[in-house]
Length: 277
Length: 317
Image (tube, rainbow over all chains, first blue to last red):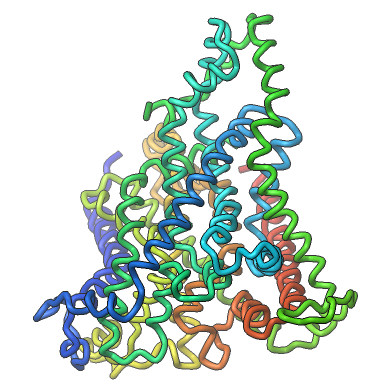
């Protein structure tokens, strides 16, 4: 199939437009993060800082407990990702392999849980966690994140399980391997990359989450990065834009790095999950 | 490993035949072991998701408030009666619908265009692919902060560009009564494009290339090829992702909370922001739960209508 020359030019123009639209806000964030206050106050802001500085980063750390918030975020996201994957993998296996009523019910829950507004979930959870004294505590947030990450984790993992041919397991069984042995030495190694990808994805979603953290964490020393970032916002003068941009950029780095690692697998997982169910 | 997990073809069904006794044993074992495998996830789902959701629905029929000493009472449909006359809530509801549709439709069209481009053999494809994913990886709070910097009336790049192009002196986009909602919608479109693009691209890569080439040989133009070959194959994924986008957008919170916090004068106060304030600023748990119920009901009905209409129309496709 050949594409004509004018069509090609049109395609490249469109692609360029997309690139600009997608990239410019992020580039502007970077540019702002490295600008000294004098340039931020200038009436004619430039794309490239004339006198780049790291002062905004220092000021951001001075003004808000960023390191502590990052640690809280890390604990919440790691805890949620590990627990979610540990409990979701066995269930995803059953959902993918068996066409039982239970499997259907779980699939139904995955879909329905997407439609519920978070308020309806967070008010009762807030009351329950309050009784358990888990308000304003990272473990309480981990519990909420686990359940919140489960639907997508189940969806992705079930897709990965379906991609492992049942014939491999049957062959192992014929060769005399027991059920557990088959799962551990045949299925698990084939699933491992998918499990890692799902865990990392759960990590990113928890790292980025804002609403539950806003409701559940009250004191600054317990709060996660996104909540702490919102303390920068408000009646910001132009001079405060620099630290705001610097902190926002730093908070994004972990997600970007992890996402770059698993990008292909996420798209692959969505595909298998979506097409074969 | 990669080839197995990512792109294995469905296993040939032939091999399952004629293996009678060999496959009886493991299958039965799974049935017994299934509950054991499922329980670790099932318990949290029941306790922390299904249970609270039902509890939330029940709360909507009570006068539950935060920090009250008297016991909570059952008040029947009183919350819903109050909601019916709460013009502020319905205004917020209307804004929520405008926002959801206003974000979902451009999101879909732009993502479809980008997915079609990324499916071509273009030179900067890798860069566009990477960039198209970036908004997905960013915390919503950071997306909001980033666009606040873009929209900033003095130090923002948008006004500066407009000044450079001689298109007036710019304005305060997020505080203007007329501009706030459109400005916020643009951010919503930007932030939600990646998921849609990835889903559509996956669908595109599933459409048979040979069909495309055959149609081209038969002299079908680009538009005809899209209508007759690409779209029928893409349709199920397009429907699913659009339905999900509608729900997600209607229920979205963080972006607008950071950008405008519902202002100016409530012009961007999405239903979720409204319910959040009702519950956690004024402590009206029961009333906020009733709002949540109304949101679920309306979204479910809208989705049922949308999907029923689309699926019926697409039976022959």
